[in-house]
Length: 522
Image 1: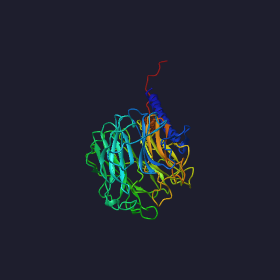
Image 2: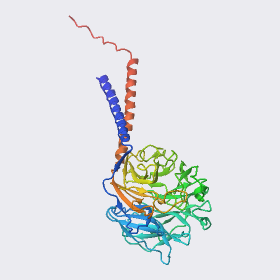
Image 3: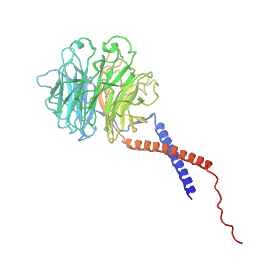
């Protein structure tokens, strides 16, 4: 009986292992079968900005969601025409409709509000930062923040964060506490004497923090590496322990864009670098290179470069996304770190289609849902490969950013990238700003982007549109399946090994000796 039981056990182990291995393979086939699928949302997208003026140009939207009341959402944007200013738009029904809200100007300052950024702290207080432009060159003369306790319907008197020459400003809050962080590229008057360029190198990225609701701020601390001469595009995020991190771009030897020189695209590579503090902003570690082979996708303005997508999940994982032309055309790539930015995964293509297929994508934003689902939005030209019309796509991952099997089209009408204010004079396309935005929630994602369907080359009108997508945050299910599949592989190997060893044991065992029972007496 013992031999029969052992044989059945071996057979069962082999069978279970093979079944689980087949299940793992079947799961992989199901995921890969969806690659390239695009889903058009049946619901209409929503006009966020409410400008009757046909020549207003809005871009660079940032969308934030109130953690205490998720139906309360706020979008801020910058306005480039007919004059520079900053916009705020509020929704209290989950993005179903929006209203424009005016920001309060600092007392005694008649400059132009510009380049807003927004964040909610953990108790639902909204903070909006902005710079004040002054002079004939419209240079920033100061950096400010204002508070709202009613979800963006009204604002307090602004408080000053920093002084002049603060470029590429951004704001973020501790997701579990009350500390605020502000980051920017600190220039000098000498660096801004040239047109659309910086006349000096070595300008640092700095960070300051506030523990009293933005009323007072710490001295700015340099967070970028001193040896990096041409840097910019800081993206700021805070981990669950209240530690800030800044993702930025090192432009290497790119004098073309830094000095606004005529010519083609810089033929070198950029680096994406992470600066991180492990003590809530008190001390900053040396930068860690996330990717050293970023190939630029076109010319850009160093004053207002496109920032890489950057997000930190609730478990502390970091995600970086950017547009990269290393395969011949611009694709969206993503890397993930599970050890506070020390090491990073291989770059994963996010956009649908094949890498290097001639369809350019750009300007990604990334966000992570509470359960770990990763959402990335970006502009895509699949429907107009040789032209200037773009769609806004959202690609979602339920396996932590390893694959993006399904893609959603968010916009109902395409946008012409040649409509809007001029950016760099060495590009035929308009300035679409420095970012678009996505916020990931448990039941889906909400996005905001620059849109030109209501404009033309004659008006250059740019609006802000938004859309929401219902999504299952089933990352835990996907992880459980991968663990089960891995266990199946191990069980399969173990079962086969036990079977082989038992066969060998049987072959090597001596033949059984028949028992010598007494013969029956006749």
